[in-house]
Length: 301
Image (cartoon, rainbow, N blue to C red; front, side):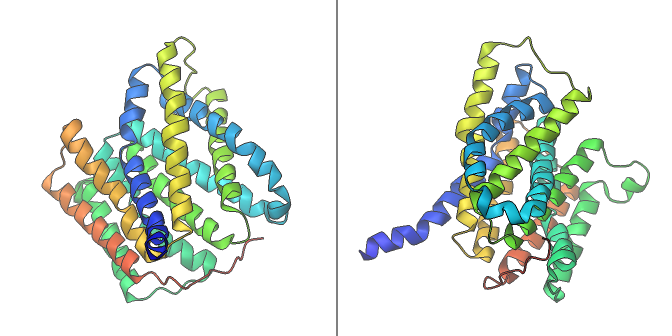
């Protein structure tokens, strides 16, 4: 009995560790499928269309539990969907390490959003984390050279993905009464809808003439990689302390950096590594100082 209870206690840790590695290695299938002729927005559109079809029945079934919180569900669709869209698009079209490090400016966005929307206090450690994260981003984007040449559009998309993800996390925390499955479903619907709008606007063309293998690989990625990564991460963080989950999720960044270095032969300059180290330090500070007993009050109805 004691062994069984111990395994149950460690299960969320194991699941979150595995899902974080899946997220960190997601650039591999994404770039592989992209090389088969399916561009970023079309890839996202099809993948999240599949996930939307899977989650929609549960979303409708749980409608009575979230009908009073339509505004929050709409915001989750906007920010959660936008986070997945921007993150995936940046990984497909950008340098993996650079995108992942810029995405991990989460302490800045999380602290700012927590203060504005959840009235969370900002202590000296959080101020330090924000300072380190901003300093790290400054070095990653080229230091003082950023004043002469603006960041690339992929850099901006990577930054936006981190901001959207942090806002989505705040909404997930604030909407305690809404089932996690409904919130995930709303996120999928939002990503699918935005990708559809971009395709209809002609930002990218839908690739009708690609191999069946490409569509098969995309379907398998959506069903057995993307779905498991989403469910695993969201389920785990609801069953463990916030500080602990924040530390484990840094494995996503580590997996991406190590794999991109070994497989894609990506490299960073010394100043970029220094920036990445500052951002990781900020992430650890935020993880260790997180108050696990706080239940935020929903202020958006």
